[in-house]
Image 1 (cartoon, protein in one colour):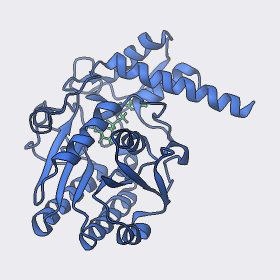
Image 2 (cartoon, helix red, strand yellow; image 1 turned 90 degrees about the horizontal axis):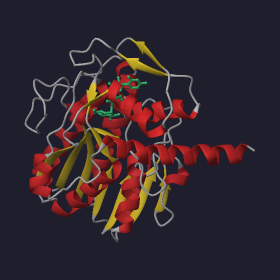
Image 3 (cartoon, helix red, strand yellow; image 1 turned 90 degrees about the vertical axis):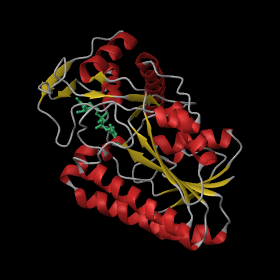
Length: 327
Ligand code: UFG
């Protein structure tokens, strides 16, 4: 298929673009490079630099695309609490511009990066797709708003749409991994501390109602996540907005993640305990049964140690490259 990948210079978008190309699709990446790296865009992809609202209409008018995979977004929970305006503009306004370009130029398929953050603090885990959606931060609220807009477009305009609600994506694939200008995600932060690029790691909150007092998350390997996008694209049905959770189904606390990083790296990473980060729920664990049953998704790399090992290999290679570029 001929596909547009928004946010294809970011972590998730660039790995998915790579996997789509490996599967034989033609990919055009749209990215404003506000967070992404031009180098992360696969060499085989066309590249259009700019905001979606500035470039999507012309791009979709000029070529008959078979689908859009929409990854571009602001995606930091903490930042969204303090600067919601960035999220309503950057996520909702930009996504509505994309939906309009899709409608006007009759692109038949859309796969959207939704998130576990749409559910907020769940009543029970694992979280299923019919669980209540009560986001506790603007990031989740904006992603949920876009999901609602997509539902209306699929019904009214016969769009075939799939939203994939990611839990905590981590790991690396084919030399592509987490490399953001400002890092806030747990696993890369812990591994940067192991490399000595940071003094220590902060544990945000030790008073959660969990066994060890730290927050629990469900970590999913980026490669498994990318495979789900291929399946979603193939399964998208006109007039239907299907929503699937994607996780491994197992929760790990912040302390367990740090311990796993210590085991994988064999380095005693220093930690400090601090207060909770605003907007963080206590426990998020996915049920991915629907994706497994309906899409035929088979997550393969579900061991946390394997996810951390891939991230560690990537981050060390990145450290070496950064070092040789400086020297
Ligand atoms: N954490 C720390 N110290 C840090 C960084 C994070 O203790 O230095 C904790 C957080 O408080 C949280 C856990 O580690 O409890 C994971 O935090 P991340 O920032 O790695 O990930 P989030 O859970 O906040 O968010 C991620 C994605 C979102 C997605 C969400 C759904 O960034 O897009 O998972 O679970 F919505």
